[in-house]
Image 1 (tube, rainbow, N blue to C red):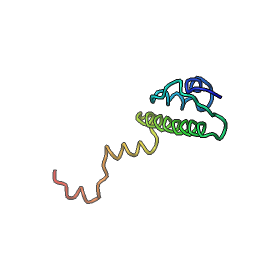
Image 2: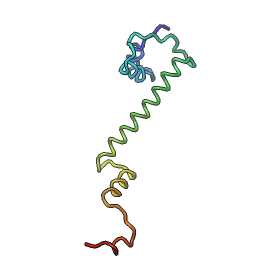
Image 3: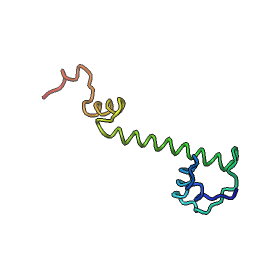
Length: 98
């Protein structure tokens, strides 16, 4: 096929994001991708990298959205409340001296 990373990154194929990420990571744009046929090692690696990168972007988006109180999810709100109001045993108030 004789395609390069640059060609793949510019295409609308599912692996285009992964190719763009490989270029950002330092691979040369003119790196030849000899086999992009289904089942080839090169295609499998690019698609796997693409899927994992998508998961990371999703997780980062959730973390970003959870940073705002109005879009925070249940787990992040519980963590915030636990940090602001630590739970103490019932007898702690009896032993506390003011």
